Length: 72
Image (cartoon, rainbow, N blue to C red; front, top):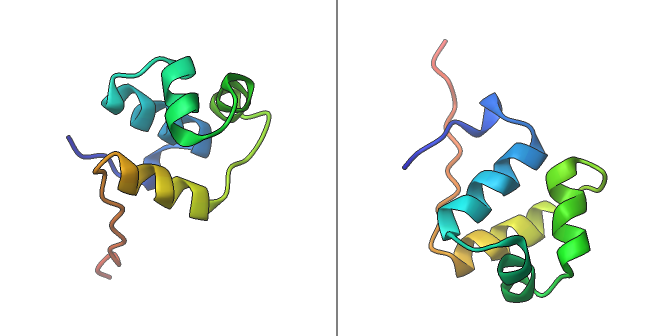
């Protein structure tokens, strides 16, 4: 599956990634070494995660992050 990240906000992106892993918030939190409350706050937009953390989560779950410049 493939998404264009610029079409989503950060809370939606994290939820999509978690759903791709087929893990519950509890399982995803444990695997990502944060609390369930932290994942809930990220997914609700109450807290922001760092790009570094997102890259680690993606790497651990075999998800690619690709940047592509739009053609003019």
